Image (tube, rainbow, N blue to C red; front, side):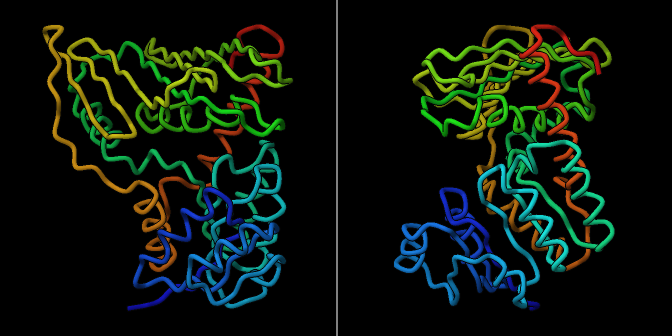
Length: 314
């Protein structure tokens, strides 16, 4: 068995999840973890067995680790990923890949130049319920697709530098692309900052695709319920997917739903497993940097629609 040495850059909420998953893998040696905050370093020291903890991530990049997970704040992603790729490391970065489309593509080209793997944390590509729906769509189970409705809500007070579009729409655009196999032709966004902050905490996004397919997304930090739901409406059948419990209810020829049996999986664990296997075998990943970069472009166009109050044609 070939062991892969891994480092984690950023040990906040998501970084700790990456640590936990890597430590479960018998063919992974988690040898380095970086964070700039003492609280996170001390948490790792007290709760995980990690040989090297540092407040200087360049120590990880100059070490013999082969791959890194980048789980730092969004605005740092470009600089950290660029340094990691140039240091010869394979990279999995949490979404969004960057906050700037041009910088995202620079990372894609840099990874290609250095022949390094660049993956983005679009975790719902590894959700068994989403994958089952993708299979049904490909088999023609729904017939002609009419529209998708996506609802992503939580009651949160996030960082003041983060708006709801940047935080949540990367997931939803990625799910749309993954299920439909294409990107939207137009985007219309309306949003509000209901709780008095500068940036929006609630938004509604309508997208038009080819073949007259539409999507409607509701994203909010104000609704007091955590919802991760996708509804598929088609000519022959419809479905309701709850992404967190990984349940699917099918509606066909009546208003009575039929629940499908879905084997619930560990989405983050499977995503990181996919990344490590790709590093070991020199394979491509389904959540590569190009997917991440195109998603960032859609985020920029969504912001443009929101700021200008008009539909943006793509």
